[in-house]
Length: 119
Image (cartoon, rainbow, N blue to C red; front, side, top):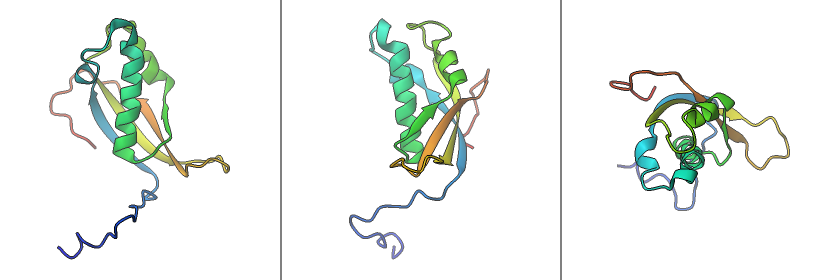
């Protein structure tokens, strides 16, 4: 209980635990439910960005070209139901950037999603 109350109000947890890599499954089907046909693939990319930002705690999220191609592979309307992604938090080499870290989201080919865990 003492450790739980250690964080003072307004103090931010440091996410400078630097380079971390995780593999996750994003359930796109539920995230784009109810979105109009012509906005589905763009919204899926936006939702992946939101997911990665929430998981890794970085504002700057970069989506890999292969992941983008996979999302758009069935057209703008028929987005794949699920996608397996690798989230890699990396140091920003650009000195004048306001963010010290960024997240790179890459595509992991996967045929069967059952029993997969966040690694």
